[in-house]
Image 1 (cartoon, rainbow, N blue to C red):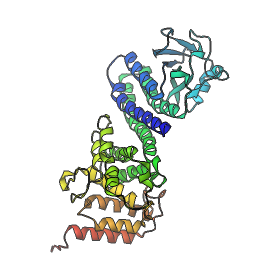
Image 2 (image 1 turned 45 degrees about the vertical axis):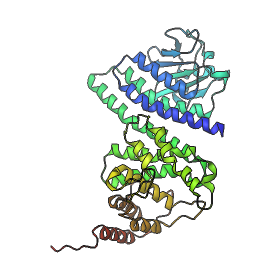
Image 3 (image 1 turned 30 degrees about the horizontal axis):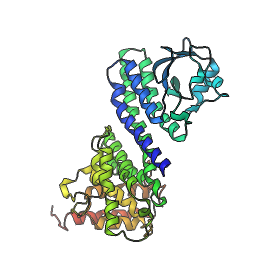
Image 4 (image 1 turned 180 degrees about the horizontal axis):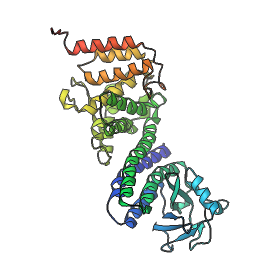
Length: 417
């Protein structure tokens, strides 16, 4: 349990580092200061005491340090000439490398002003398929080895940092630099996605019956948003909020996830508190999307005020929260739980229509029906349900549900034209 908790905390620090580095990488300041901040983020995420950030130069072919921390004696700048075999090995590596006596000469030469043996781990920085630099880490506290969790954290951050290092190295015209900056900003969302997908997996690890739940809720929420016509930025926000909506469950006792019967009042209170705990975790993290904390706190609120923790009603619920509430409920309905079997697709959708508009927003339910119908006729570019359940429902049945929903919302009124 201690190992699991430590890994989770390290992953949280990595996500926080990603959120902090976004403004850093695009701020107007000397690159030496940006490099130092990037290096600090990698060292904190991986638990390193010593580290250096090198940029790669093609003519002559060498690594040159632009930031270093923790080493007692490291030249400034440090440089490491590279042979073609070193460049090839670093460019071909797809993840950070733990160095030892047999691998130093594969990745680094000893012809520079720093001994490769100072470094215990190196992470190549790549952008556009090319080597842009290297993060080289030294010892960890107690000379602990770099394990998978540390390497994964490095990998996420270094993928991100490689773009900034490449951007710094560009010497093209102003127009070309603007283009590269825009590409950098567009790429940031992709790295957030990667980090938060890993985070969603960590959140759901407590019980086999909820594995994949957070990932699916993120995907369902983004798909519902797409059917409602939101823009790409809002879809990214919905997906990320879905990945994180249950983050507070890390504080819930594991035994509650496997209980085959109903929770008693005390147990329910402990489970319900995950909304507030999650809100407290994410409210201070500066994500690119400012309202994620609302979805984390309120995804169990309902339009009629029967939800928790704040018993909000109707218009008090922001639209992203209404989307998250439906996506979360839909996945819960169609997934196995210790106390029941999953509902069929048709059964879950019928129940949601029955509970609308009292508990769920009709426009959100309608958007879900649109995406399910697209699955049913095979027109979804990215199928909504393919990896979770069979789409064993006819398009006509979905149309009938949509008609029932429309009838309920209009209270059965008919209009003469």
